[in-house]
Image (spheres, one colour):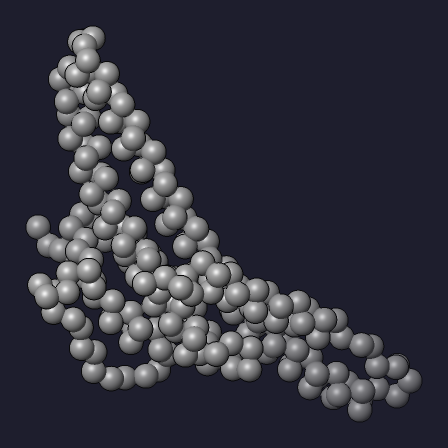
Length: 211
């Protein structure tokens, strides 16, 4: 079965927008904790979705200069993705345990014994771990989505604000009697600026200290 091997060093290089370079990753056998191996299609697909979100965020960084430190933002994205990879590797292992327990549960579904009770108890523990890891992944997805949306909305509103500023000046020159009407775009842009800063603050709170 094909596997995806994820090395921590890759993330920090992959999220720096429009920068090319050589990536050197730790040896997998000497530093196993610096790698995560995703064997199952489910977890590989989930990581691909996280990576696409991180790429959406990274694309907005050049336009957020002055609001966000791009190097720090890249580090936060790397930490978030690594945290996601660790949780997906953990989810992969939990899935195997759940599947194994489920197989025995079907085979012994009519029995009432201590073994059966132990089986049910372990299924409950595995279910709790499953919910826990999914909650962590959902939190990461939510934070990346918020950061991407905040950056994209800021860029759209900034571009609109620039356009409205130009057209307002042009209309003022063309108008004879009509007074200039103040635009509300600047107010919206200020709100979106706050949203961008808040999104990255929350990312830092969650993943700034993760390793």
